[in-house]
Image 1 (cartoon, rainbow, N blue to C red):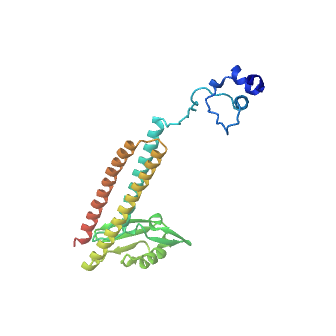
Image 2 (cartoon, helix red, strand yellow):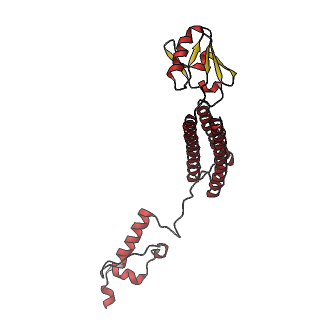
Image 3 (cartoon, rainbow, N blue to C red):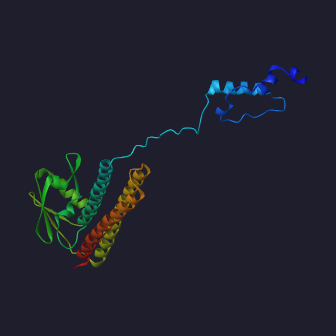
Length: 260
């Protein structure tokens, strides 16, 4: 009979060998019409031996996400806010110092704040080597701690743009403030306005740097988008306060300059 002529490999189909095909989830592709059941079984056993038989869906690995603690977040926020306030205060102080160096109709020791004197071969600030006072509203008195520096102080005043002529009596130097002309007052007013604008630019730059710091914390997942919006709103309020402070100081200085 035809049945007896079958090869062992072919007859194995009719014997239904237990090869555990159901446990393999991967479909075995048939390459052509000549692939026998026996070769398929060998392929399955080889794959099971080398790669391992996987049952069910592949397992996902658990990822560990590091999050900042509330204490760390608050510490970073406080550090940024503290830095912003300190830098804005310095910006206002720097502008105020520039304002004070511009003389108005009244005498003020701060008018000599930026004056440097060549003292024993090195430039030093006048305030470090002399006491400055205002005997009246239209004059300044410079009393050096070392009388040998009188000539150097006198030379520094003459070379400066203060517009004042020093009177050296061998003990002290007296400075009389000349009356400002209307044209000179307007020139000084423009200079003050420019310094005020520079102060505002400094405040805006400080705000910009703080925003960048907040954005960085958001990218690091330490702050949420809502957190950044709230902090940016608070930062804008602080910025507005310092802008108003600059405007107030500027208006006061401008008034002094334009009042005859």
